[in-house]
Amino acid sequence: MTVSADELGTQDIKKLLIKQAVPSSIGILFMSVNILIDTIFVGQWIGSLAIAAVTVVLPITFLISSLGMAIGVGGGSVLSRALGANNREKAKTTFANQIMMTFLLSFIFVAFGLFFSNEMLLLFGAKGAIMKPAREFFFPIIISVPFLALCMMGNNIIRAEGKAKFAMVAMIIPAFINITLDIIFIKYLDLGMFGAALATAISYFSCFLFVLWFFLFKSELKLRTRHFKFKLLIVKEISELSIVTFSRQGVVSILAIILNHILYTYGGEHSVAIYGIISRMLMFALFPILGITQGFLPIAGFNYGAQNYERVKESVQLSIKYAAILASLIFVVILLFAKPIVSVFTTDPKVIAETPEALRWVFAASPVIAIQLIGAAYFQAAGKAKKALLLTLSKQGFFLIPLVLILPNFLGIFGIWIAFPIADILSTILTGYFLKKEINTKLIQTTNGIL
Image 1 (cartoon, helix red, strand yellow):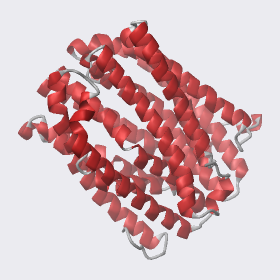
Image 2: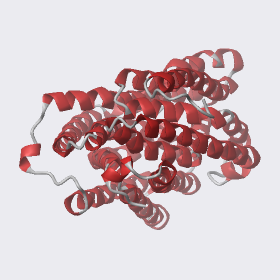
Image 3: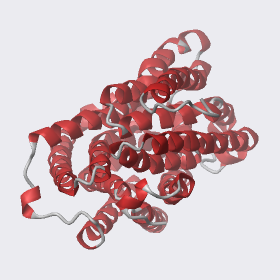
Image 4: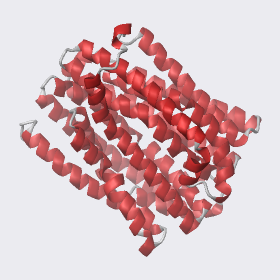
């Protein structure tokens, strides 16, 4: 499943997309299973209140660690285009600047999180009985976040090199370690929320060690001391594209704050737990679509840098086609098996009774999300930061947050769940418009089939 960077511009797009997307999908699957099983363990062995606590804490840690993801994706676009233009020195300097940016920024944010821990937990919805387990979970996790940030950054660069198989392994290793340690720390040593957090923290560090090993021994980007100097133009180019991913995660975190507070207002702790289950299922169930999106990025970026626009267009169309088919199948599974799925997470009868309908509504528009995800990814791969930012923020920022604030006033808690498919449809229409216009102008060729 591994290809060299140069093969991103020569191999058949269908075969290339499979080689890139399958390992990415498997990696995301294991990461999703990790989070899913983690939620099941704390729900079954500690209680539904523990799910609510995890739902509060994880958006904080993901916001900080998403600095690494953002720098990885933004710099990965710069790096892919540099490789496509056969400028390996720029690619190496870009990578070195990414390492320094991730290391510096993640430690600053972690220090801020530790100093204002109570305020952050309250802001993200740790109300009432949720606060105590949330604090137990927070501290071991926050200390390990810089390692997670470096892993997220490195994983994107591994994919940008065309080494999707190694990126997959980097996501599988922490999943196995976390699940194993969860069983030991929670079930047998009875360490509760602290044990769950400790298992997760150790798994992040294990991922970091593997990524470090890859870049020392397997990477094509052999860095030297001269590369580790901040280059203003490269930092600027990375930052302009990184802000797209970080802004998306920032908006996701703002959405989490709003949702946790509104859910607590309308339904108490158990409603926060319901969304905790749904949010885990969103990541787990959509893993193949996210894998295709990640597999698509280096292909589009490399060929855009090489000015091979016909291959870029073909990669866009195939990615949308495959992702749409898979998303439709996922929706059918959720529609038919919502209740058995929910029952795996908890024994709380109220949560089991109310979650299936909410889950079906949240996934209702999933068959159309392929256009939105691939479209936004295309503009990022092409280095078009403003359009990428607009389209990336469209679902959560422009549509979902306003809908979540407005609809519950008229429809109660049902208004929260119905907001998700409405936001999916509106953001897909917006992205489809810009993507079709881009294909018909920049990529020159007449669009066939999908758009």
